View 1 (cartoon, one colour):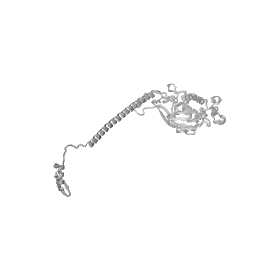
View 2 (cartoon, helix red, strand yellow):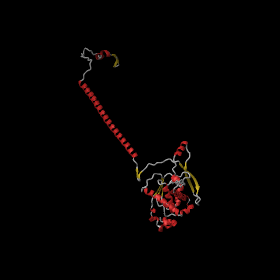
View 3 (tube, helix red, strand yellow):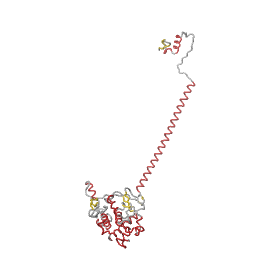
Length: 358
């Protein structure tokens, strides 16, 4: 090994002589004799034992080992505790799922109850009938454009399979072809169809009123006859149980059309018919709600009442007639106040006192 000291290079027997060679080289560098300074050098091949230091290292190593053991035990206990919590939560989730399934089965098995009593699920059966619509112009001075539609059995309009399904459906006896008279709302003889698919008396009344509504000017003889009065009385007897069975508060689904006071104004009903239910109420999406006050102040109270009652009888779950203050005798019989525009006055003027008071 070569070492450099004080600008001089010395070869030191480092590997062979060890500490003695170092001392000898140092003495020769400073002209010191080794014999003048006797040394007692003992060489020990084993590692020197330092009691305090070694004891300290042993204690530290033992404490570190103990800490690691305690840490492992604590981690294991935490994992076991969390596994128990997860297992408890899984059991609770399973219990809640079972309870939800049980409640769902019970809900679907029992009939639902609504504001008016038990509610039945709507059923929409297939029908082999369709509506044929065509437009005409009224012969009156107003020259109103009218839509006529007739309910007839459909032919093949999609595929052979569809035609087979339509042909397999039975006739429902409602306005098929020439079997029933077409009405304004497309219902045909759907109300009280008679034997053999022929329209009943109620269906004939609805048809007469629908035709009157389209062109009142050409039905003046009918409007001033006792037949018209009897038709209104019969409609009233048919509609009365429908109104009595309805709840005090009507629960409707949207869309819904809401109409305010009519007050015997037939022109307003014509405007609504021409712009809102041009294809008829039956073919128009949504419900129709009338807020009462159908009579007084107008000159066509009887026509308005007859038309609305016929629509209610034809579409009881689509047309809703609420009651206003003018639907009481104290108000609609106030001839002194309303004069010729009073509902009672118009009934007496057209049908006489005996039939008009009924």
